Amino acid sequence: MPGPKKLDPASSPRALLGSELRHRRERANLSQVDLGKLLFVSGSFIGQLEDGSRRMQMDQAINLDQFLNADGFFKRNCAALEKSKYPDHFAEASEAETRATEIKEYAPQVIPGLLQTEAYARAVFREYQPTAVESVIEELVVARLDRTQLLADPTLPMLWAVLDEAVLRRKVGGPACMAGALRHIAELVRQHRIIVQVLPFSAGAHSALAGPLKLMSFAEEPPLAYVDGLGIGHLQDDPATVRQCELTYDLVVASALSPTASLALIESVAEDYEHEAQQF
Image (cartoon, rainbow, N blue to C red; front, side, top):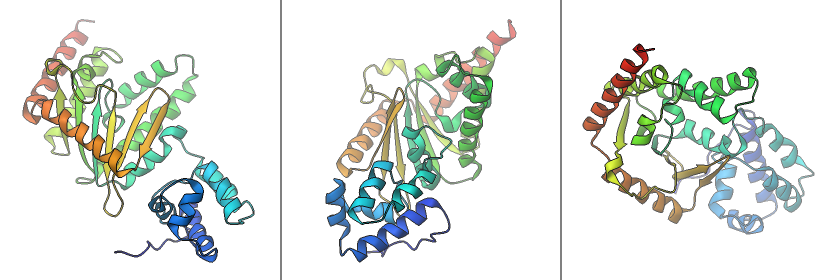
């Protein structure tokens, strides 16, 4: 079994917290399981906090200060982690994306963030926040485009997305915007950078009717599942829950069109949008 990851406490607030947590836990003669019981989490969860692979939440920091007599250390330093450009419910998931070697995603309504174009992202955020000033929308778009840089690496992470046909048919931002968004996806497929399948309307009911799903695998960490809704999101690390999410994704894949047929459909719909845009 590999030993604990060596962290440089100066490298990031998360590394600092993890290093101090391990030091204070060992000084208190507590195992990871013992400390986990106090926080109502698993011992492996404590291990992930210590090796920096999990983000410490403020309520956990406050409790750790109490249990480990840390005099407010964890609360003070945890505040640095909360200065994220992403919403609280997505911040930890976005950080996990940067460490993932494999990302699998089912998208029922909109193009996944990692595959969005600037125009598509701006249209989505404007609909999410119709009364926001333009500077707020611009910050959201910049953060979204920063995430897409994960695909600048030619091989990692491996991204496999299943798009519901509704994603193709929902006219976000108008026909020109949709044409550009779908051509972008098609180009990434043709470059062999991503795998994309379409779940057609003809598939009928399927295993992921409850909503979007993201699965992430890592080189040295257990897999995670992320599920979200309107303004909320949950990162799941319970092995049984993750396995159920993996089964859900596998069943969606089984109902989807092949990658070749999916690419043909995406490009066909993009062409329809291009013809529509020329009429205006």
